[in-house]
Length: 288
Image (cartoon, rainbow, N blue to C red):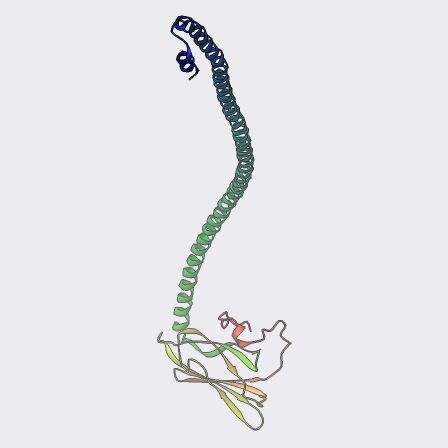
C-alpha cells in the first residue's frame, strides 16, 4: 500500500528517481521480510527437534517399560518355577519315603509269609507222619479185631458144643447225673446151644417199702448171641427214694432176676451242671 501511494504523488520527472527510490525500499522490505522469516524457520526446526526428543523419550520409556516387564516376568516366572520345583522335590521326597516304607512293609510281609510257609510245611510233615501212624495203628487194630473175632468164634463153638452159656448178668452199674437223672448200664451174656440169636427182654424196676417204679428201657428188646450191652438214662420221679433196683431178663425160655441194693456211692467230682452238656452214653464194658 505504501508503494502505490509513493508512486501516485511523485511527478513525472521524478518518476525514475521514485522508481529508483522504490526499488531499494522494496529490496529493503524483502530483506526485512527475509530477516523476519529467519526466526519462523528456527521455531519450526526447534519444534521438530522437540518432537523427535519426545518420540525418543517415548521409545525409551517403552523400552524401559518392556525391559522392566521382562525382568519382572522373568523374576516372577523364576520364583514360580522355583516354588514348583521345591514342591515337586518335597513331593518326590514324600513319595520316596512312602515307597521306602511300602518296601519295608512288603519285606516284612514277605518274611512273615515265608515263616508261615515254613511253619505250614512243618505242620504238614507232622500231620503226614501222624496220619501214617494212624493208618498203621488202624491196620493193627483191624488185624487184632479179626484175630479176636476169630478167637471168639472158636470159643463160641466150644461153648456151644458143651451146651452153650446160660443167660446171666456180666456187669451192672447205675450212676447219678445232674437234674435228678441217672445213667444205667448192664452187660448181658448168653449163648444158646443151637447157635441161634435169641430175643432178650430186660425190665428194670426201682423198689422201696411201699411203691415200685418201672424204668422204661430203650430199646425194649434186644437180640442176644454172645454179649449185649444195655445202656440208657432216666429221670427219677419226684419224691421217690428207691431202696433196691431189680433187673429181670427173659430170653430163650430162660428167666433171670437180679436184685441190687440202692446205695449212695462216692461223690462225683466235676459233674456237669446240665444234661445238655453230657456226652453220649459210655459203651465201654463194665468192670465188675
